[in-house]
Length: 86
Image (cartoon, rainbow, N blue to C red; front, side):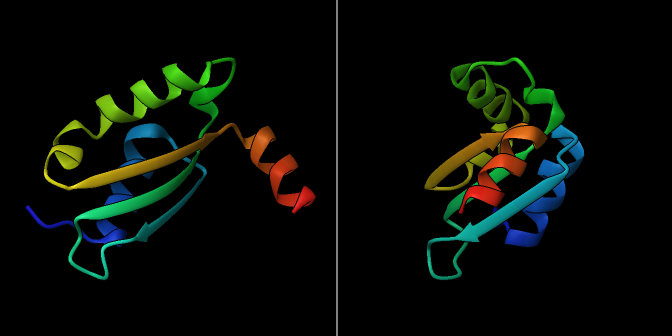
């Protein structure tokens, strides 16, 4: 199953109630390696490992069909702070 950046972004937004999603295809367009930034209120008061597990569970079918998946997960507050400090 090949998946596009747009499809993956939509799935993440829907399943994780994300307020901001950035998906980058690192494979050169073949849809086999993605780097994502996910901003969701569902991550509030959750440690990094739990956030990663939440994402992995929500995207289990999609992740199984690709070669590499890298994620950075933020709450809206963390994202606002990270965005302004850059």
